Length: 457
Image (tube, rainbow, N blue to C red; front, top):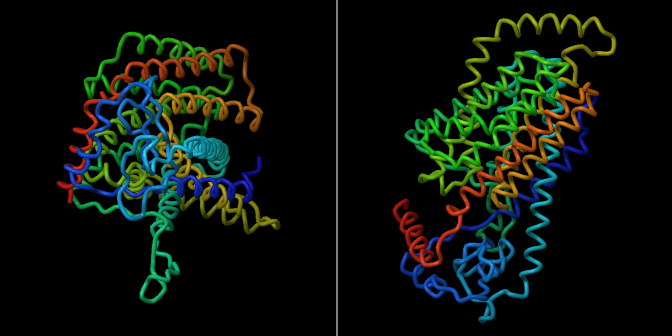
């Protein structure tokens, strides 16, 4: 099975660059009194009021109600002479005429992100399975993947020369992405999450080694079960009974697919369990970090980059300790085999190097693009998109590797996917009142946000 070509990889990178450029938004700071004064007219909107926000997000009071219409402005359309501010549609300077165009651009961004996310995730699943057949060292393989992602981030953080007429020497330096700044105390706070990320990533990388990619993704649908258990035990967060009822088809579907799986592997089942448990705890810890300063100001992408670097630092010593001796013996045998072959093939071929690099790059881009998709769309849309992504990976892997699937196994996989979708819908319905803020609290929330920014400074 051939790895994805360079042309497809370039297209994915261009789509990611387009989406990343579209998400570049300045976060200007203003005094709490100014924020409260400008938000006061929006505190009690009348029915039919159409509100416009120059930040390009639906942050107006009453957004989402049936009687209110929110006008979206393209990102980067804020005034260059001052911070974004709120205007009623119809007032001087209110960009009502651009609402349809802005919505079309927003839809285009979401579609581009979804296409890039699906492509990167599918390419990762295929290249990861192919690379495990040539490089049977999961700890080292996981470290290599994280290292490739770090190299990609370092390129984005590197200073680049830019021509600027206003600069004294006509040249200045800039970066494609601002690098975060964390103290030693912040690093100590991130270490538990980084450790869980390293464990979950290594287990997820090794899971398809002895089983099919389709079976691995079917088992991963039970991550909803692990997440519910961890939230109940760690965060004491209990959901309505309907949410837990949707876990029944997930468990039944996975059990049915497992019993009738022709390429069943206990190693794959156990590795998926370890991975989902680690990722469930990791998501809880990362959510707590994102709710605090300065992680909230840096954003999810910056926090994920920092956690990736820490996970790499933790995983490299473990890989060398557990697999160092076996890698040296494997390397010597592979070098002798490559020298004996006239075509230069064998384990130490260019295909292996290409697979290792592509797997690491696709893994990092897939995770970062998932953050971008969640940032641009609602959690409900993200849940549906994530379920469709699993369907794409399962069907695509079956066709690529020609995996044998029994009718009962296909029924179990479909039941597990439907259960995962129902769980996401029920969970979204249970949390909808947390996402909809009362109209009268807008001024207080904006003033409190400004106060937090001032305190951070």
